[in-house]
Length: 45
Image 1 (cartoon, rainbow, N blue to C red):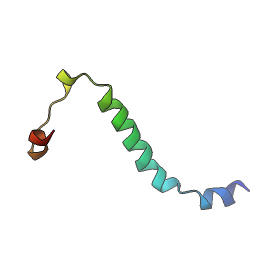
Image 2 (image 1 turned 60 degrees about the vertical axis):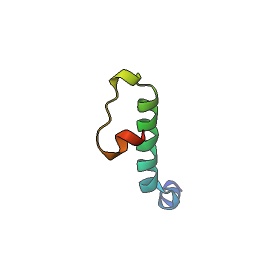
Image 3 (image 1 turned 180 degrees about the horizontal axis):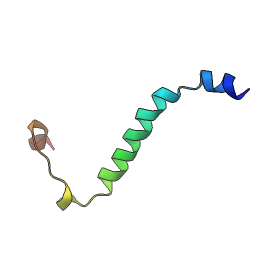
């Protein structure tokens, strides 16, 4: 039964989603003085 569930579960797609969630939490909880933006996106942010 577990193997049937594992085949239908989008595990590979869930890994990048979980990684992005962790990154958002880390960046949101970092103090603004520690963040350094470089590149073209720095002026937009």
